[in-house]
Length: 331
Ligand code: F3S
Image (cartoon, rainbow, N blue to C red; front, side, top):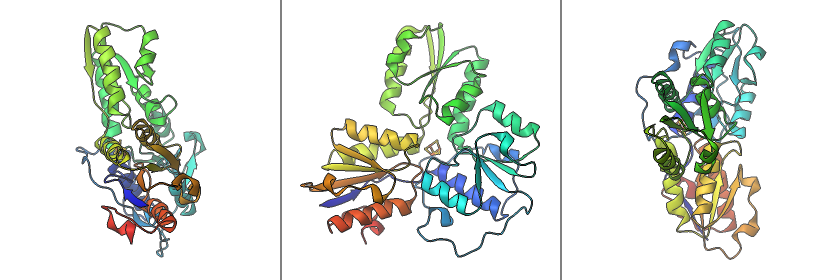
């Protein structure tokens, strides 16, 4: 059985950046201030690599020295949507809270890569907490687009997964005055105003965005649509679909709470290939590979290389032959 790893799989720029910020803060490498929130020019499409001991298959031998002796670090919700990475952060002493009020007064609050709502940010500022804003610049830009639409009087439509924190942040950026739809069919019951603006969750599929924009264009007098799907998402989906068209079975690796991983699973299945989603190698079922000649592997933007490598290694133990552009996975 051939094992092929997608060209673009695993950590994206925003996830890598968030992990670097948090581990840097813990090691005292950088001060935490809310002014770090918005880098001027995000880099697009950069191939991501694992970050220090969080993304590495080896535990760090260097004991992390707290940068701020009285500032324990907490992320608001998971820093990224990968339970295994979050567990490693917890082992390094980086906690997680579900509300601003749970952070002790001396604590540092980390805003996760998928961003938060402005009113939650205001709560943190009102409490005078130290802030480390790891919001991905592409998410921040989508929030800025929402604010622009509101300021200019457009009705704001957000294409995204209801309940996802990034979408909650986008709705918050609209002051709560936004309508969330998960696909074009949901627009049927939406009363549209003449001037409509569209912003898209960064991890959506381009085909779904085009479908929603098409309906909005037909039903509104004026449409302003921002394509806020990030390059990392597009690249991973395109690579996954290309690979899915070549293999007998696809394995998608990543957190079950990861929107972009779930999207990869969807686009692979839509390509017509048998597709399985696993968080770790332990979930692989040998029955999936019976009579299969080739297996493709892809991974969400919050999946570290060490988990991808473990999956590939487990597949290799099923069959020895491996072809990958990421040759280290085949050794
Ligand atoms: Fe940012 Fe896109 Fe990654 S929005 S966190 S670069 S999936």
